Length: 96
Image 1 (tube, rainbow, N blue to C red):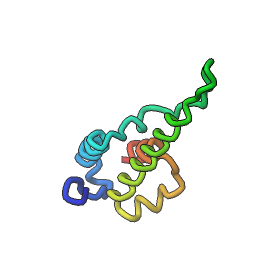
Image 2 (cartoon, rainbow, N blue to C red):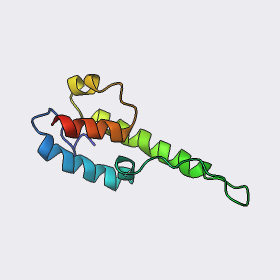
Image 3 (cartoon, helix red, strand yellow):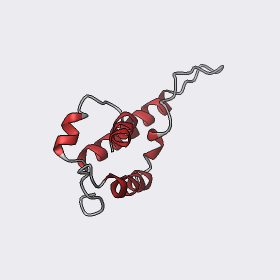
């Protein structure tokens, strides 16, 4: 990741964002930027979607980790309270 994506400084957001999004796509986790976590559901046969929820949360954690790794420390600290990749991504988009 270090060789593929520059660190976001703020001023480079317009060039950073598409490369970062492409990386998240290549890692198979970009869907968490646009999809909400599935709601718990129990089906007629008493099965449920717990595995889908677990997978989504795992992908969200990975995506957030990738984002945190490629932003300047001052940006990371400012958004440290954000706990989802979508919230982090949206905050960066709104700010820059």
